[in-house]
Length: 275
Ligand SMILES: Nc1ncnc2c1ncn2[C@@H]1O[C@H](COP(=O)(O)OP(=O)(O)OP(=O)(O)O)[C@@H](O)[C@H]1O
Image (cartoon, rainbow, N blue to C red; front, side, top):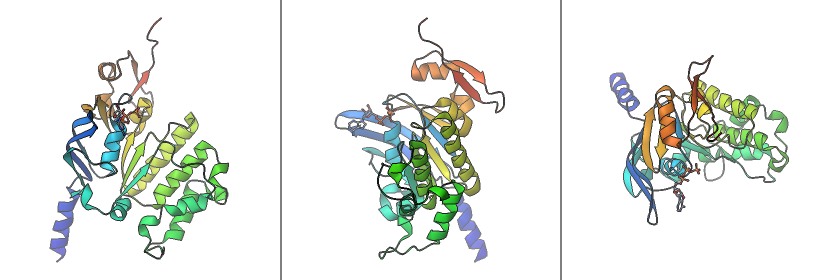
């Protein structure tokens, strides 16, 4: 029995967490993505980068099952994404948007508790240790003192921290983020990314994040997937993808590349396009 069990876990550990093959997505007559192949293994942190309109959000929506591809397949932990029920999928995948939560009149605690929905039975009873989990996460994200405050009384940065708390109590295995730091100042951007990094290190969660800031992507992601005009432009480590030549090709700008003095990863400086 034990032998069988071990063998089974060996097999399942080789199945990618996310596997997309030959994806094509059309909106009416317009092809937003074509022939996209993408694989994420457990514990990877992928950054999806590329110019405006290159198909980054579309790819994220396909991976989360919100949109269906016109062609190609998506497997989540070896099973076609469309074969999961909504509730099953929400125990595996959580999605966080750039403005994670609207300014509504619910309390922070109530909003965070909504993240437990996938674990509730039809009477709304939590099948896990929901209350405990919520308290732990509020504490971890320094939200305990804000727990009874209403969401519409918080700053954008605080609201995004609540959005992160909501997806953390969801205990997903895969986190999809769409430009999560867009509305945050530099300090909150770093704080948010550090919280994600800490969460990833402690749980081994797989993260796939659309990021516009290439320096942040280089700092935090293990791998980058660069899209251009709906096509796969490049995939690889930040050191492989973020070269001067690649950035010139991807964004049609002339960057200045430097090595980060502490982290020894590529960072880029802007250069005026016209003097
Ligand atoms: N619902 C839609 N109907 C029609 N076209 C759409 C729709 N959603 C996206 N598109 C088009 O598909 C292309 C890819 O859009 P998408 O939002 O995926 O790009 P993106 O890389 O995330 O862009 P951005 O960086 O500007 O957020 C764009 O040309 C966009 O206009």
